[in-house]
Image (cartoon, rainbow over all chains, first blue to last red; front, top):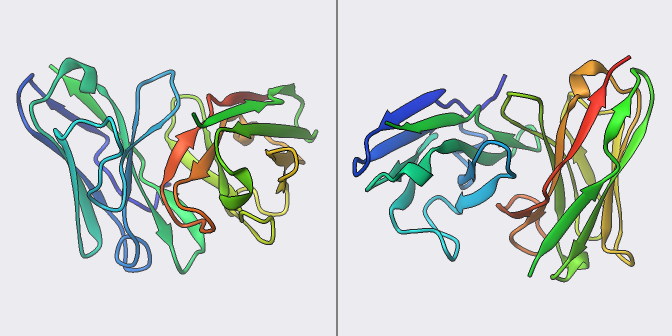
Length: 110
Length: 122
């Protein structure tokens, strides 16, 4: 069972804005930045957001992240069909001395 | 460009061992921590282990502690995952991934390999 909690599914229609949440604890999200990964089924994960809200080169500015307290969220605006994928949050846990992933959220574009 | 290529996966019987390799190129390998992450069929990502940039320290998930060992050879730009006493629960695609910031292990993973499938079955 994942320590970082994500809703298993989310959906939206093209052009909509969707938000995916990630809940943790004081020792992980409460103490360390959050990163988000996008995984199209059958392919390797890809870094989408790092250090809470920074986008790697090549990631559209439709994707944004935020962190507050022990929670974080990923927002996708102007939803497109190619955004259909699994999204994982991740952070470091200082007390357990390990990396943590959320259980993942499957985004469906209707 | 950064490239990570895993190898060594396959079908293995319960209780046996397997060693995975991850060959890196396109960056100064000896400056970066490396993680192993796995994904069981139809499941989410699970962190497995990390090794410091210089090999001086390693950390493991509770599910593999005492059975798996991560190591690296900076002269060969390769990180390894030795997996012993394998069980059916270890069946997964195993990815190696590079930390995005040098000399730390807590940062984001900015490059991933394509993964190698390990199937534990009798």
